[in-house]
Amino acid sequence: MLEFLEFGPAQVAPRTQNCLIFGLLFVTVLQGILTTLSQSNGGYKYDYATVPFLAEVFKLIVSGFLLWREIKASTPPRMTTDWKSVRLYPIPSIIYLIHNNVQFATLTFVDTSTYQIMGNLKIVTTAILFRLFLKRKLSNLQWMAIVLLAVGTTTSQVKGCGEASCDSLFSSPIQGYMLGILSACLSALAGVYTEFLMKKNNDSLYWQNLQLYTFGTIFNMARLVLDDFRGRFEKGPWWQRLFNGYSITTFMVVLNLGSTGLLVSWLMKYADNIVKVYSTSMAMLLTMVLSTFLFNFTPTVQLFLGIIVCMMSLHMYFAPANMLVDLPLTAKAAPQTVIEVSVNRKSDS
Image 1 (cartoon, one colour):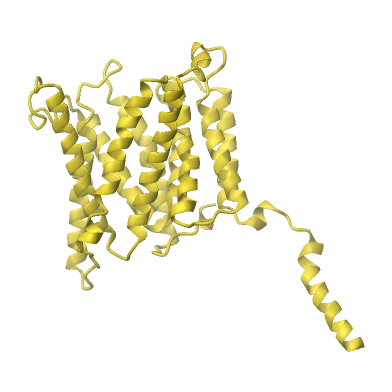
Image 2: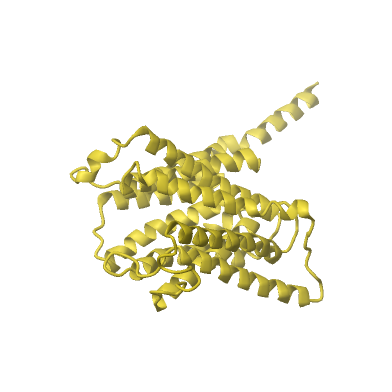
């Protein structure tokens, strides 16, 4: 099905395209599993705020190395160093910083189950902003597929109505729902804006990444410093406890998170946000299935129904129209019949 994907102006080989998509699917599934394995007695022995910081540093180092190799090549890459262009790159980090704070605020009003279900709104908000800001047109079938994807992922997360949490699903304060909608919009805005940055010119992908991850590292470092001031340095400065509680699994979480960011940047350059949304949504469903074998997670009917709906959505979005709708033979032959009639009329006259 992946051969039906239409990629952006910067083209790569179809095999590379598929490798990027399946690579993102793999590392996204692995992230949830590794994060769970890094826990100890239901919690983290390490400061979880250090994980995204180290992941940004990893992405920065990898991007810098790849850019250095590209510069050493016979044809030097294009790099726009004008301040008017560079000043746009801190914006995604600022949006994600606001988004993270909105997430914490949302969780003060709603329970975890409601928050996870509301998080699926970002599928629809991504498509809306994708259409409004990037001017990418979607067919009616594709809009239906996106709605089905949101319904499918939501269905897979809904718990049985016999459980106690079912009563609290729609009983949260209105502030919680408003913050949830805002969180979904901010997540979509960050993704769409990043795609805009990647495709606005023909600059080297590694140069663009270098700028993004430089600001990402700065903002994550600022968060660690802010946490120190909030805690009045009771645990010491952040650089002294950076690797406290880390294990091999924790380092794998950092490397996997960094690899996820690098693959997403490739998709933003050579594909689009909708491909990323489908990849991450399918990864979430696959993670839930694998959790039944790894963590004694009990599968539900809702999970299987959600998987079926999401697979239908995947086919509807990416397959060409002639695979979805069987056109009757009379409809296909209609234009030829009209031409023949017109020719006959001219010959009679």
